[in-house]
Length: 252
Image (cartoon, rainbow, N blue to C red):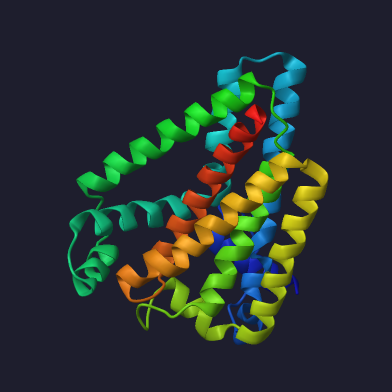
């Protein structure tokens, strides 16, 4: 159990972890521990909001934390996938060429453009949420929901290639048990989010499910299957849309 959590945090976060051997046993349920990283991010974001309100920091300081904390915790692993996917989509090439672009370690012009657009949109939404003094509990749930759905996708969706990060975790996973656990976890988190956060929870849940459906039925088809980069794209876009939902529900 502990080794499973260590493997998940070692791979998907920048939080220092003790060394452990990556075995079939430790990786079998590593995807099930993935949402715990979201719990850490959610707790830090809520704590940061509390500190900013208590110390009467400006809305911009609070918003900066909302944008930066997830990157600090994850080490930018999902942003890397987002950038690679942005380059591949912007190429408008066939499936094989898109997959080659995903493997290219260099950052292209379109990746830089879309990364800039992403952070501008995220900062604008975060500042708006801060100015409204919006409760961020729904967003904290969202960090766990996005990772539950991302892990569910890795264990369920067809893979684009027989190599890479997604393939490794999918290959070693006990897929049936992982799928069941993460599907139930995502559903429970959505229900709890709706109960605890009311309209914000409903908005966050709709944003997460909507992004997941687009991911499955549109994006995956463009690449012939799932890859680690596409999984990173999903986490980033899911969390951006959930932040947008938190802001939009303030107007309802």
